[in-house]
Figure 1 (spheres, rainbow, N blue to C red):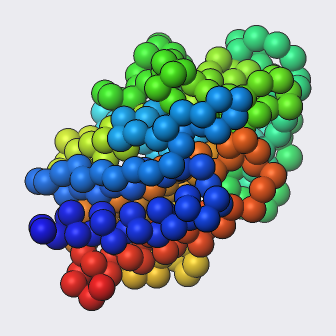
Figure 2 (figure 1 turned 135 degrees about the horizontal axis):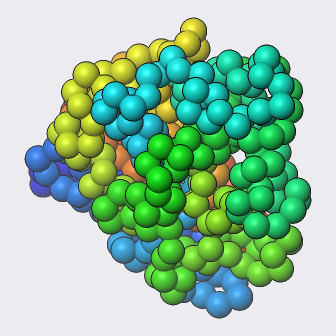
Length: 340
């Protein structure tokens, strides 16, 4: 058995235990290197209500906040690499209508770097889907809101604004810019179900779980991307190999930004983070609310993913997802390094 296969087998045991215990409906675990894989294992069910559907290798997941790093961060950094944007540009340089009736407003001084690193002071989330109807109207309201600037928190608003910036500078909707293999418009029958949504009155399957992304057209800067484990791992393989971003940019992904504990978009290793305590210092990663996650060990040259539908049929259940993520990450690192 090769090292990659052994690593996935060991990590998969933790996910299979969680499914067998009924904590989550199903899971897919996989790993990849720049030169080998992906190796992928799966278990459980993609849907349990109103009908049952089995999990499969090619089940499509709502990737939730993985959208922030796989799609939006990548698009922004490509604009930086192309000289269209500087990381320290204020958003208002490229979004001149950002709270345009008061040019001295603090929100107009927030930079691209601060948004990527979640150091803007913008709030974590707002119920944008309750403000009105129509993606264009809602985007206009996002731009014209007098956002209160407070403590530095992980913020969907940062990435909703970055998504609008990408659309403005490319002249194309985010849905037309999705990376190869991903989609914003999946076949529902191929998808893992998420929540029975009280607002929409149905189980979400093939429709974005995030209410704000749904109301903003299905794909926004913070959520709305769909993909399989193979697709997610293929992205990680290409990123490690320098086929997504330039090598110099890749180094910036794992460097703390703006006085914080995050890199550019990506989380970096920190105490109690979801990637576990055994990963190398050069590991980056990100999770998504629906139960998904991707971690890339840039020092050791491998990546792993854990994709679950932990919010199905409800988000209001404690599934132990954070403990599961850390257990999978630690088992992955231990076997990969020969310690496990």
